[in-house]
Amino acid sequence: MFDSRHFLLFLAAAFLLAITPGPGIFYVLARSLAGGRREGVLSSLGTFVGGLFHVLAAALGISAVLAASAVAFHTVKYAGAAYLIWLGVRMIRARNAEMVVNASQVQTAGAFRQGIFTEVLNPKTALFFLSFIPQFIAPQLGHVFLQFIVLGALSVLLNTAADLLVVALAAPLERKLKSSVRFHRGQRVASGLGMITLGTYVALADTR
Image (cartoon, rainbow, N blue to C red; front, side, top):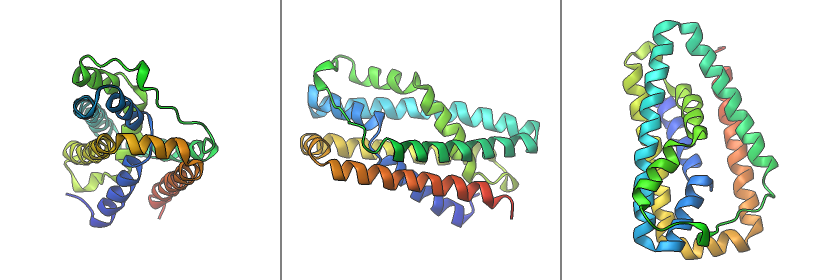
């Protein structure tokens, strides 16, 4: 069902994105600092469920687009590639931006439920899945919906694994992110370059 080369590329890109500090990781980190490990784990599981919701919704949409027109599907791919490049540029430009984890502002009630709603109500998550996953789908192999579900679920699993690691290392990770400006800056630049490379590659691959 998958081309091995594209699948390995997907795993590498998804792993890079999973370990990139972003809103999801900082939300889980804040929950862990405010309510302890149990709060962090429940929040991670909540964002996992919310992420699967976006995967299912995006899979239904992409399948509908492909059924309607192959041209429309490639339009989605090119638009997604452009979005990935834009994300990479924005990461690099924001390399000096301050990252703040404010645990005192995080409510400790309903961590699992709040994690679901936090992820489900984030339109950027939906936009990301719509732009990222189609780059690795091969319509000629069939089962587009299933391809999307499998790749999306793997991406969400990697994100959740990274979140759970953050829960386990909450206190030292907070100190590292606050104290090491060089680490923060270098990580963002590396992730940004990875996104730009990925977007460029998938945009040019279809032209060969």
